[in-house]
Length: 473
Image (cartoon, rainbow, N blue to C red; front, side):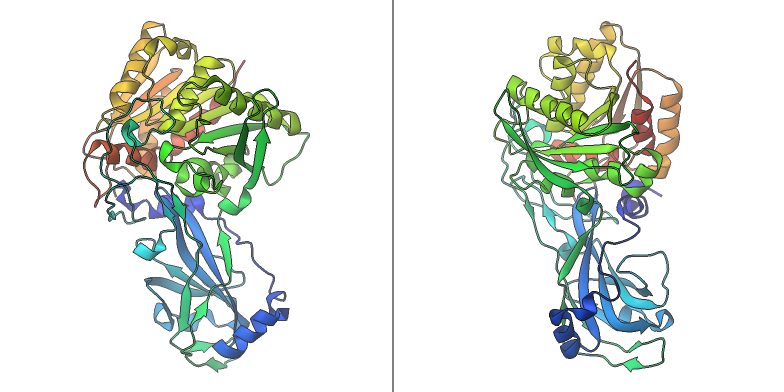
């Protein structure tokens, strides 16, 4: 099975097992809930549930709270209609959360296809015509190839291009109608009701686990919005690693949630399955694109990012020997700039779809631990990162290189990553084979190869595990 079926891998990685919602008694006491129940046939409240996929946040389910327990065995997808959406599964549950199977409870969970056009909540910031891919796990929207711009520009988009506008994030909302009979565990039949219910709550899985904060650097005077995930079982007597994720230029925004909802780069590290293996802090700055990213080597911008890391390390029990950086496109460019500006800062770097023009500056990377992933069809990142690898190899770096099929599922990537890790070289360089990276429905060009690189890269568990194996001496 090819990576075109990312649904199982990515949904499992990004879904929070218990949705944060009201208790079974709290909603019943609300005036709004009682009014809704009176008009809509025993439904107290509706909650929209969102998840983040490789191509952004989507509305993937609705949880309806009823006034009594519902018989799970009597429900089917035909029981409900959701405006402009495809219902894929319906079951009862004891909480307002998706589950592997139904059980009698007050909540009815309506799962929705992530392929629906109306599922998409995040829209990228690249101008031009957009097309919807036929990726089974999600639909993707991207642009035609913009004109080339120098790499390292804070406004650089895919492949270093410009032509960007601000990305947008819709508020999740769904309109649900009970078109069939719902049966309670007591045997009462709730007849179909033509009154549509509009969800009044939103549960953004994993995204809601981040805190939105702002840092002002005392030396540079610069301010930076950021998102911070603190391990749920944080204990100040324990020392934790920290992963820094930096987004691409097309994700520049004044809305700090954009970097969390654009794709997997930030949220994957905070997923329950990841935290179970690697408890860590996750830091995801939100750059505005106004020269604060540091991807052009801007010293004050880089100092502000480092100052933020130092500030967090002073506030929390963070292991400064286990600081990691990763980023996509402009975020990789910024990671590279931090790597040669502060060569002793990070234990390892996971570089995705990026490059650096002045190869004389990257020589300090020869003594660092790096895993880089680019696509052969990316006309800037592929030759650019190849140039970096060739340069640091001449400086003495030991490098493992490989070409992988970009269509692999997370499970199919696993043996490839394991073989590369077994070589135990400090630097690993993976090129995704041209013609295997771009999702169906998109165009086989440099831009879509660029964007689809990070849709694949962050699903590779072996690389994520490798990152946490690295520790500074």
